[in-house]
Image (cartoon, rainbow, N blue to C red):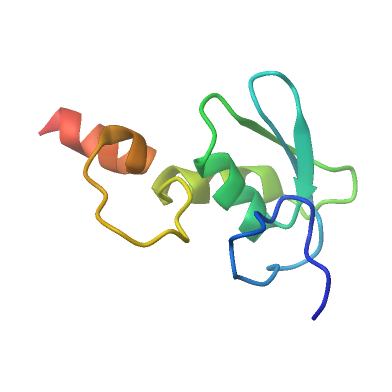
Length: 99
């Protein structure tokens, strides 16, 4: 098995979706570099996280990660009912509050 990027959660079974392209930082500025796929999944699982493109990243990498994370549920690889706000994506929570 190929090694995965540092942003890949150990319980997330998915493979990397390309080269390491961005850094995801949490509220305390602890961070991990990752492929766009795992970076989006990590960002979706953080409160107050930020994403920055690495110098050699393809154009738009950070925007793609940010946009994808908006629609992903935190820890999206975990099965089970998701009903609480902290278990839903940012997009789902916005939709709930605008209805």
